Length: 173
Image (cartoon, rainbow, N blue to C red; front, side):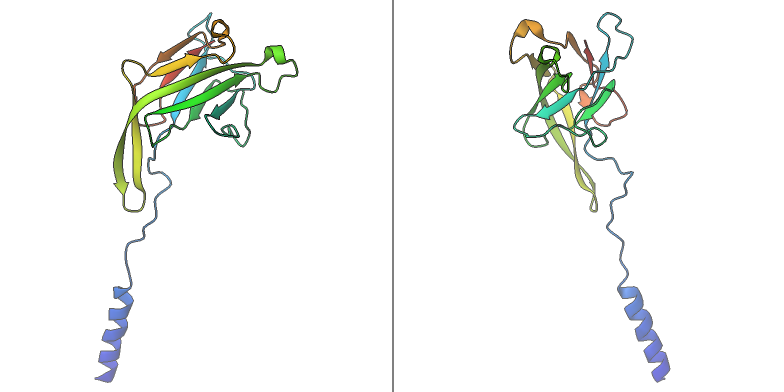
C-alpha cells in the first residue's frame, strides 16, 4: 500500500511541475522595420547601390548597424521606427567615408505615422505596426542647402508597415 501511495505521489509531483514553455519562437513576426530601396533617378526601374551610406537617428551618437558596420553600399536597407511617438527622424549621409568632404552629402527625412500595438503571445508580448500619414508621410530636408538634396524623389509604396517582406519607400537619386 505504501508503494502505491508513494508511486501516486511521485506521478503527482512529476506532472504538477510541468507547464508550457514561455519562449518566443525566433520565426514569430515582431515589430517591422521600414524597408527602403534605392533607385537610379535617370533609369527609375533599376535598383542602385548607395555609396557608403550612414543612417543616424535623431539624438543618437552612432549610426544604424548594417551587418555589423555603420555604413552600407546596398540598394535596400531596413531601419526601425520609434514605437513611442508619431515620428522618427534620420540623417542619411551619402559617401560618409569619402576623403573629399565635397563628395559627402547629407539629407534628413522625418517619417510621420500612427502606431497600432498588436498582442502576439504571452511569450513574445506585443508588436507595433505603423501606418504612414496619408497626407504627409515624410518631410525631406537638407541641413546645408535645400537645393542640394542628393535624394531627388521619394515615393511611398506601402503606407502600412506590417512586415519586412516588401519595399515601403523608394528613393531615387
